[in-house]
Image (cartoon, helix red, strand yellow):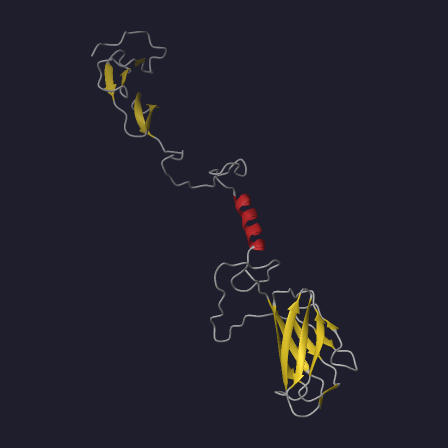
Length: 247
């Protein structure tokens, strides 16, 4: 290794740095002059170190330093990372305010599995099953209504625009083995739907048969007295509309 070119130091107490000789085995080494001017020393750094002046030994030494940056290959921060704004690209880092806003929007638009109310139809290409021994599928409070038929005839039309409800018929006489038909006007009903009618109270249970013919916006309900005698009874009928299609 060749000597560095001597020169007058700016300060007698400070060493002079000399360029590393090209023949040295690594450029990480530094060739320095110590306080004895132009006495050369080849020094190698330790890992994660920098050169400092040691006032005790009156020389420059390698001093370890603390890492204050985040390693891009993976690291752990000890303080918060503050971003400049919300992400604008697909792989951009998300701020807390961005995630909070997205979570709030998601919460307000999703249906809770613990129980919730939807504002639009539920469409599924699978099966809906009630599995509990007290589970039900049907209509909740608020979906139904009731209407009483006008006096004088069981043939009088009624109007109730609900998917389920109660119809109380007139108590006009219905002769033995005779049928009468009345119209239920209902905007919920479509021509392909199924309307189920059940006699739940009023009159003699088991004395009547019922048939329903749905159409767009209404259904014709036929009541037949299947007994051998005339009956003059007000019947309480419950109906439900079930959605159905032809294809």
